Image 1: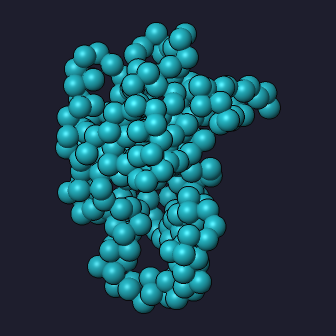
Image 2: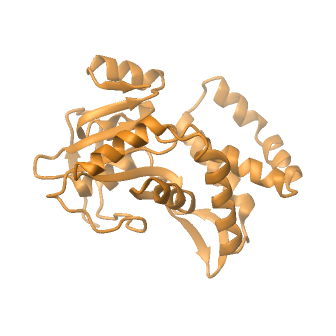
Length: 249
């Protein structure tokens, strides 16, 4: 496998890049001559929380006992998370991997129903309309808008269709028509966002704009000429202020 190294102005973030672009939810392959705007999804385009939507679906469909068992088995990890011990992003990813495993052996149709529930009951009602409107203005100006997110593809496909944007998400794994309960790792978060969006870089090496909401999005935001911190967490707010980035709240 051939690797290449990209260095951004935020120079201590170095990512080995492969050419493994996730194309499932793209309308066409990247065009370096196109002006591209990239955005995170959860926390940026919606204040809804995917894992809570998955929890609510289980409870609404007679599986509350399964979810309570899931929680009991992870009390110690939850305590470590809230005490600030360990890597919070890794905890969130592990949490999602383990939670989604509760849906193993659902048929394609059943998991599509789960995805629809999460979007319609959690993500869409909590959408950040001001951010969506700004991205639509980019689109109206002829710029390509791409959502790049760790959100699972079945949920992201529905949300992206509602707003009319292309997307890159985290694929899930089926065995024929049966969901295995597994996702295709790595999640499209942190450095993997940089890997995916590097395929869209024009000759000047910068996206037109990028939107994110957490400190984990900092390398992703540094890829753009016009970074925007949306309802930022403490780490991103501090960094955005230091670098005179726009903050949208």
